[in-house]
Image 1: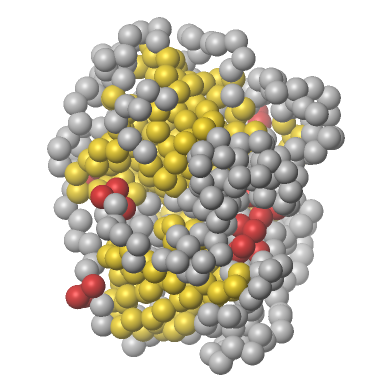
Image 2: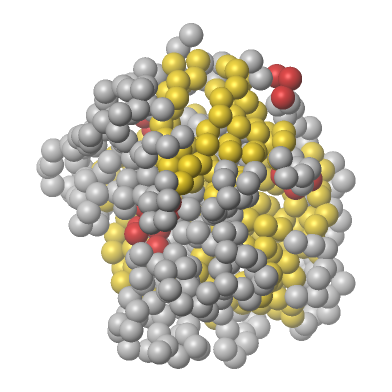
Length: 530
C-alpha cells in the first residue's frame, strides 16, 4: 500500500539536459526491417520499414537552444509539489535522446522511467516557426527499439516517425521537414508497434509548439511557464515495488507534467493552458471546482475563429486544446483547483470506469479528482487582461467539398478479442486505404455498442462536420487530428490529402488508446500521386 503523500519531484538541473558541444558517438549497427504475415486483406502492398542509421552526432547549441524555465516558487503549499515545466528547445535543428531514468515518487525504491534529454519523465518542448525547415535527430538509448512520431504535424510519410521508422537500440534517426502547420500545440511520442503502450506508460513524450504570424499578432498570454502553461495529463498505477505497471490502463495516481499533487503559481490576469491528454485510455472532463467559465481558443491544429466559452471540456487520449482562464478577479493569495469531473460515467465511456479493481480498475474511477492547484499571485505589468473577440478565419472543409467518401468501422469480434478496423487487425505489410493526392475526402468513423474510442489520423488536419448523436460542439469547430467516437456513433470528418505523395511510405490511422492501438486497432493508408 502506498503512502498517498508523494515526495516532491526531483529538480532537473541543467547538466541533466544533454545539449553540450561534445559529439555523441554511436556504435555501428544494421538497420532493421519489419516483416509480418499478411492478414488476408484484399488491398496488399509489400514494403519494409524505413532504415535507421547509427552515426556520430555533433550537437549544435547555436541552432537548438535549450531554455530552462524559471518557475515562480513564491508560494508553496504543504502536501503539494511545484508543477514541473518542461524546458524549451528553439531553432531549426533539434536533438532528442530517449533514455532510461528514475523518479522518486514514493519512499523506498525509485521508480524506473524513460524520458528525453535527461528528463526523468517526458521531455523538452520543441518550439518551431511556420515556414521554417527543421531537422530533428532522435537517438535511442533504450535496450529496445522505439520510434518518435510528430503527432499532428503535416510532413512526408517517411519523416512521420510511425511504426515503419524503427530506431534500434544505440541508433539514431533523423527527420527533416518544412513546418506547414498553423500555430498550435502538437506533441511527439513513441509509436513502435506493440511497444507504444509500454513506452508511453514509462514517460516518453513531449510538446511541440508551432508559432506563426497570425497567432503572434494577437494579444494572448504567451510567456511560457509564466502565463502560458503546458499541461500533459496522465495517471499511473504502481506496483508494490514502486514500479509503473506498464500494462496498466487506468492509473491510481494523477500525474500532471509527471508531478503528483501538482500546484502552480499564476498571476491574477488571463492565463493560457496548453492541455494534452497523454493517457493510455482515460478521458478527462475538465473544469474548475468553482464552476467558473473558461474559453477554448485552439483545437489540435490551430486557433478557432473566436473564443468558445465552456464550463466543461472533455478530452480523449491524443487530443490537445488551448484554453484561457481569467484570474483577474481572484484575490492574491487565493487558490482554485482544476479538476476532472469523471463521476457517473458508465462502462464503455473512455474516461472513467466504475470499478476500482480488475483490469480496468482505478482509485480515480467514477470520481471527481484534482488535476492542478492554482495559487494566485500578483499580476504582471505586461499581463493580458482582455480576450480578443476574433482570433482567426478558418476555411474549414464542408461536406460539399468532398469528392470521395470512405467508411472505417470499429469492429469487435467478441469478448477477449481485440478491436479492429473493418474486421481486420493491423498488418505491417497491408495497405488498407489508398487516397489520391489533392483529394478532399469524407471519412465516416463508425463505432458499435461496446466501447468509445479515440480516433487519430496522421498527415492531415480535418474538420468534423457531423456527429450522429447530436450537434458538433462549438469547441470542436476547428482543425482536428484526433476525436472521440462514442458508442453507437458515426463521426464524419472532411480532410484534404495534399503536398506529399508516395507509393511506398504509408501514414497511419488508429485508435489513440495505446492499448487498443498495440493490440491491432490501426490501419495504414497511402497518399498516391495523381
